[in-house]
Image 1 (cartoon, rainbow, N blue to C red):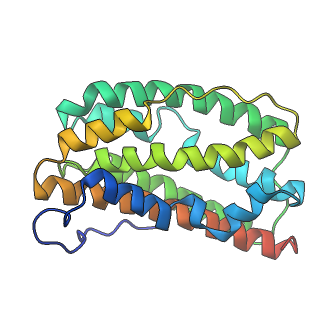
Image 2 (image 1 turned 90 degrees about the vertical axis):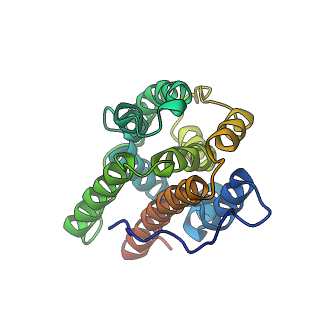
Length: 226
């Protein structure tokens, strides 16, 4: 999955909306919660292997050390965001532990036709996130992290459904609050160019997650589970 190098169209500020408001609207329209396969999983009644498949895929994309947020922190393209990024990276240390424990609890990856193609797609997802995290465009990687934190709230609901199904306790998240994210985006997105970069990074993150849910949907269909 390749990240586009073309920024979204726009002239000047993001209309009359703040960068944060625009980011929230993107999350509502393009985030995980808008994808039909995600909605099936959190609605319940799905075969356990659909939940297992989703947990394995999320662990494959977001479970590796040091992770996307730590990459953004290390690259330091926007130094004034470092404290907030450090808090987010610390929170994701706990999330990787949770993903690892949940992956063990759900059992082996369900047998699915086209596994080699799936592995290739997941490698592409990880590579796309690495490229995004190491962007030198001011605001781009920061916007991607803000989008990840927003979307992770929805993803955590699905992980919670899986944890309940496979009898694993759900730890409390340890992330910056939405209020803290909003304040940071407002402080960082003071110029039209930075606002556009923040939203571009967010769009790319949401696109990668949409691709992941679509891949899981196709795998469930190939198993006859839809």
